[in-house]
Length: 228
Image (cartoon, rainbow, N blue to C red):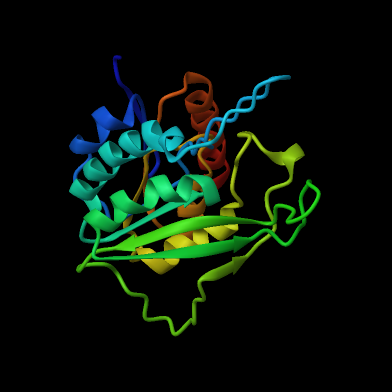
């Protein structure tokens, strides 16, 4: 597909397949992203029940392994933070373990119990990987591996899985220097750009879906106009 790229203030926005775009971005101070994480296939039929298998994750594993290798080319020595859930963690973690020097799992406590019967949904995971040249903040703040922040209210979301900008800003401040470049290869509606603005970082975002790319452009343009 033909790439579309625009610059709004300190943000560079690119519409296209991130697998094609990432190698040409140059080095980044950090990557922070929320990729699609599909759950294993479950089939519901009246008379037949199919057993789940690890093979259900194979497509996601191969897809992410390709993307992780490309991301390592621009931030293998720095930080790469990736949101996931309990099912997709098994597909995402090995590729990141292979490309970065250190990998840990962070827990995001949404401070609200979701729907279900038992073990109701309240958290999400973030794989935090870093390389030998990774930035280390010197602000004296003690940062735990559990983050507590309320999720963005559904009625306020532009994207169905939109994350709170203030939480993303806190993550960005921990993984990049002021003025650093943050890359989000799955930009969605542009919340990571909002977080970069809050924390004084530059932003490069990539989005495949035209409707979300357009929404991100409109959102970032409106914010830029407000800032003068």
